[in-house]
Image (cartoon, rainbow, N blue to C red; front, top):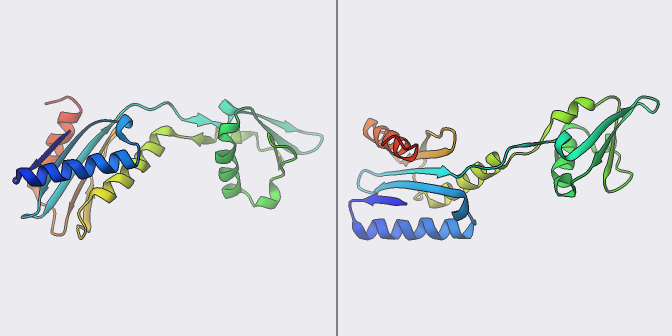
Length: 186
């Protein structure tokens, strides 16, 4: 972790704030490295965070058996991994009305018609979930009043510039340097 600031005490305070928020949100083990630049005189806050690799996304077919019962004109979903049941139901409730979804048992879900194409539906994406949690942390870390935000995130790096003025080219260059450092392209 590197926090840069013209004021050494200011850098220490922001490092402490970042560590506390990461601890509160249990993000420490999920973050590989971090770069931050703070200058209240300009005013600007630059933050780049490299996420650790996550497991791959899970599709419905990875955690459930999906089959069409032609004689009943019903698609039966048998959930084999109960941990994914809340995500599956949430996604199905978003796609269909609750009246269309019948759950005769804890692990069985039935939908009218042939819905076997749902087998490819993503039910859990750890990468997106981690990104969402890191953005939550960033918005807790950003100084109040910095309403102009430029998101320069790419792949496994979440990168944000925040200010209350127009974003300067020098800040974008600084962010690009941080991104290169985090990608190992120093």
